[in-house]
Image (cartoon, rainbow, N blue to C red; front, side, top):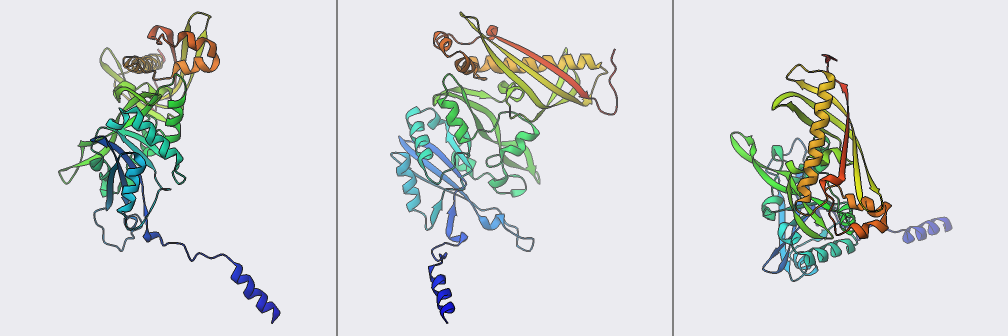
Length: 375
């Protein structure tokens, strides 16, 4: 009897989950967007119908339900509270995977700093959320579904890594890394920009709209320097440490020679200080494989032409960024880390193309079943 009473007493002391809520009674935010309108901060929140994500084969297939709400206020905290008041459920922020800033917010440093500060102080906001900028209307962007009518959960908006692994262009940026880039002295923070593409895919002869990365905003200390298109940033795929692979068409005198695949480029950047001036060496080491051969060519010629193409892309990116006052590779940051006393003396003088030496080594590791000639 005593044992039974003791067990019953212990059960009363055990914690329970009586105050927990069912999953369907909570609103889960996937994406937050920020805009400015009539000097008011506008907050957009995207939520995806969890029923669609968990559907089974026996359920009827229907158009994915993507909910987007918005509210405005004098500041970001007021706008987010106004949005919360319109919901009938608790709004859960822990699952936010993406933050999107409209161009108008990126152009206002004060508002941008306030928003970043608010996000960093939220207890249930994770700093590994993906970061994007855009000039598109946020309601249109946040309601764009993926291929096969998948929800935005399977688009580049929420899962950029899959596309980046196939064709490494502009590296995805997390909120934590973007804040670090803006706070780092002499660094340029590149923020990928999104647009809606209606010209590539069709469904039963009807154009389908998909989200794509088409460039990046260059910023320093939360101040927007300008915007660069994707083609101008081609050099990033050979310099970024996170780069996976890219495919290039190699030409000679406007005649295509071959298509090659570059995988896992190994690039190092070194800063040199001689007491009066600073110079930089970008050394890129590449392994290439031949995907298609259009003109008979030797292995030496193809390796040399590939190295020339990569060198041109790296240079073009540096020049395009310098034209808007940006440093695509944050070269001065390297000088600051290794020669901090020299950086102050050179801070007013921008790094020019003559200060950068680019060395590219290409190893043609595989040419397919048909070997290339050596002469």
